[in-house]
Length: 357
Image (cartoon, rainbow, N blue to C red; front, side, top):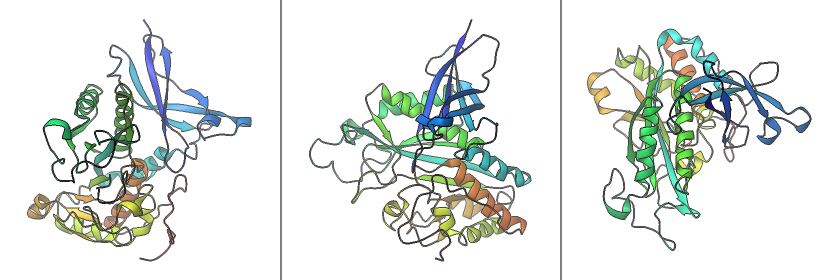
């Protein structure tokens, strides 16, 4: 008996890539193999040479169709089987291999906002809801729109075998979060992207859109981030390694924020639990710092750090690669050598990645 394999990939749309997928019928007993698609329709190839290759890299049970059906996350390759320029997973994998002996690990808190009819889900047709305050981890009545979607998404992630750690409502009405971890790169990126795809797909059934915009509503409303928790075997053993990582992150501020997602200047303003995008700080229990050290880590003098700067729309492959290169090179006493690809790089007004802070 045959089964359905949903091939999923990230396209070349700029500045924020879209997720694409299509279904392949696979004969029973066979594994999903390489496939292809029309790159001229996904901003990944010209019409005169449009073929692109899908290479399966992460396969899970399909929690939506059930049975023997599968979800197949793919890297995009050129027809000579080299990584496509938009393939940041291959780039992340190469960085991870260099410092694999340090066991760099990640947990990512993926925030997002539900939208319907052009406004955040549950907001009134005219005007605004009550100010922020009751929505974060809230419960009750009409102030928690979207919970039914969140519950379905959480169960789907569990049924797919993803390393989901939890969910919660966020500070702005209609905004939620799920957490994935603790995983190395590129696996952390695989599971974040697949979690995003499941969220988009389930929301279709409710006529609701999912936005990963960094600042979905301008004004006195929280933005949406993807706080990235990071550790190595050295940070898990002692405080000095955590300090080394924090200090190293402070030497490459613009190189990081220019690859931490589109619209970062709108979100990292120094307000709404953020640090200014062009200033670096770190501290224990400080949600207004660029990097926060959890109180339990400060008390134990070992553990992990939380980079609070990445946007909800960040590429987890790029963010994890940057953190590995910056932190692990510092721990090893090496010079950072990372060349960050320009594909999808957001523009910061008035500055360049090489500018000093």
